[in-house]
Amino acid sequence: MLLAAGHEVVGIDSNLFGQSTFLDGIANIPELNKDIRDVEAEELRGFDAIIHLAALANDPLGNLDPDLTYEINHKASVRLAALAKEVGVERFLFSSSCSTYGSAGAEKVTEEAEFNPVTPYGRSKVLVEQDVAKLADDNFSPTFLRNATAYGVSPCLRFDLVLNNLVAWAMTTGRVYIKSDGTPWRPIVHIEDINRAFIAVLNAPRENIHNQAFNVGQTTENYQVRDIAEIVKETVPRCEVEYAPGGEPDKRSYQVDFSKIERMLPEFKPQWTARLGAQQLYETYQKVGLRLEDFEGPRYKRIDQIKQLLSSGRLDKTLRWNESVATA
Image 1 (cartoon, helix red, strand yellow):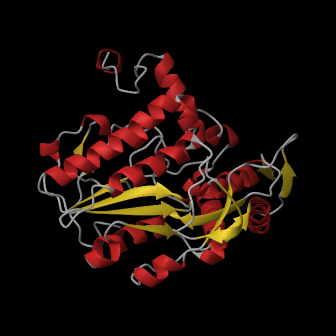
Image 2 (tube, one colour; image 1 turned 30 degrees about the horizontal axis):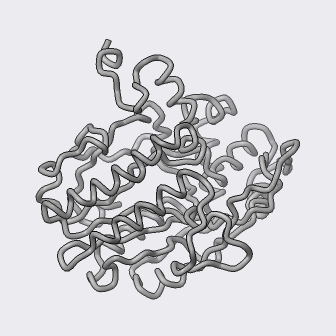
């Protein structure tokens, strides 16, 4: 979508999950194959903006080694922002998360709400926002995009995300399988609409985005997990909702107000709803012949992939590639 919007794009990626692409369609762009912790200042020179998405990007993965989560998600992110500022990059867009709100109670939270993260992943996002905000000045404008829980078809589709996961269970087993008690609240947003938010920030006047945080989603797209399950049940024929034995309330529960992004970034116009997304996922899973062992197996479970790479020696304990093994 960045390319379609007329931007020149260069990627940085260590390709930890290069073997888990779900569909074709990844754009062929120049890429620096490098760990985000090892990027040098000169490699950033000449860019107008950095969109920083790299992270250990779900709670089980973040919990695997909390110290390493902070090293990658927090320290490396702040270092990247400082290097970007040093070489004259003017805009730094940080992919934050509504998980910074953690356990937020019954009221819809705005960007002014207190942080209350309950996982290393959420805490790392808070620390980045707090530290990178201090770097803002007349020549360096960070922006923090607190994305709702993502869903939707993409080449790097993640099956641990709630709507993606529930549709996969429903299509392959006839069960909409809920692993909590279904009561937690989640705002959800299609991955394409997240892209639209980043593009809107890139195109916005500096005064609208300078050192600002934006919740990314739609206020109408706050759901309890059990409501998402009902949408899936209505989308996938001949399936029933089933709760895992002993499922407990997830301590992550929050409703979010998205009025600020509507007001400050009028270019941001979301196109998706949970119901449309569920239909897209169902049709795509049917087309590829998705099986339970595919999405519950190690190919698409990121925590299992990392454990396999560690046990084989291809990754060292810092999650850097062991070149002597990787190329053997």
